[in-house]
Length: 322
Length: 58
Image (cartoon, rainbow over all chains, first blue to last red; front, top):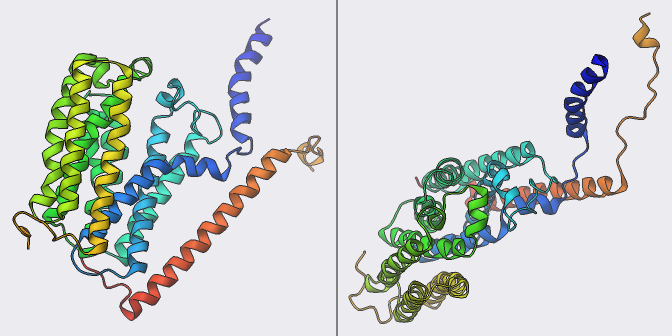
């Protein structure tokens, strides 16, 4: 009897060892998924805007190399986030099929993958392009993987407000890669993304409240309730609308951008107001979708204007920053 | 000669399934392509920057 029970006790760790020794089932696509390609595309897009808006000319090859480094750095941050958040991802329907909770990639593999990518992206951006840009990229990866993922996300309902800085840095990195410095214009682009993040993510969290509660993530609607979240969404949307217009007012962008920012900001405030007055999931989903379009269109117009040389057309006070 | 050396392995060890082999091949190809892209990128940047390849703004 005792012999049988001892064998049974040994069996579990032995089985675990055997399962660790099994060959990996990860495909190349799983490693791509670890890099969060959709987030990566937004990072590349906003970083590209920072590169283009920056004064002076950057050789296309160097600009492309900078964007690749920034993209890989963003992918590294994504992989480190998935490594640490695998327990949360496993509980939530939206993320349960990610490579780690689905069992296709082991946590250690994701950690190693993220660390190697982070090292390569920062070192080569620093060696080939700009030490400041590399420093900002390293700080962004650290901020997202450590400050946001490991500390803020499980600790405070303000997680995505402070953590939103990580998503706001790419235009500054792009600007730093092009100029070797930090311009006030790049800080404006940072502020737009920073104030855009809360209404965007809180709108998403409003129709995923139960999932976040089950996972134990202290998102604002879980901790302070849906009503307070709707109020905060409205406040941040009201703050975002004029900040979005600032590049035009300060002469970094032209009239087309100004008109787009005014219309887009008004739409964001209107949808946030509608959500505040009439709470339902459809209104939250609409605000979430429109917020993505708002940011995309704003940066796209900025890029097009600079591409066509229209950035100085119709600015009310000329170029405030020399 | 010890007893352990006399023992012949009775199991074939880890044998990959067809799916595992397919995924390993996919990973190998992805690593090769990434390495190729990396070499081409560094080469292109080196050509553009010329002799001052390591000279960059702060």
